[in-house]
Image 1 (tube, rainbow, N blue to C red):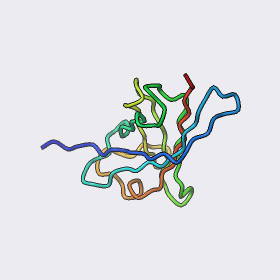
Image 2 (cartoon, rainbow, N blue to C red):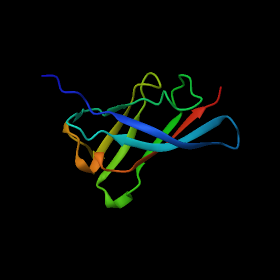
Image 3 (cartoon, helix red, strand yellow):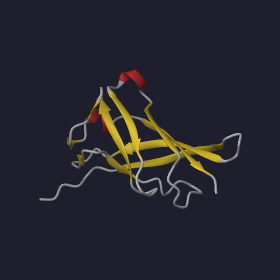
Image 4 (spheres, one colour):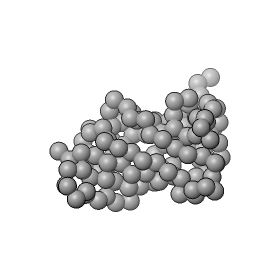
Length: 121
């Protein structure tokens, strides 16, 4: 039996250009599937390929946080991939990554926000 890994998807909520006009930052929300899929050690794939205006640029910086703040026990990090399409979102409880297995309800039910900064041209 093959078990599929859960996926992380995003929606953008706008963007802003930095004052130096060399970077553009997109903001949005990440949703993590709560189906019978699993959390994989090393994180879930988070493709940013659909970010408006980005061709295949790996982001210069990605920040991920829980909108619930201290009300949730989970924190998140981004691990860049070799392309814009194969980065990873990692979930942590305390200092330890969530163990491989069922996606915790606190992760799939969390409101996860992000900012992704890309260098222009």
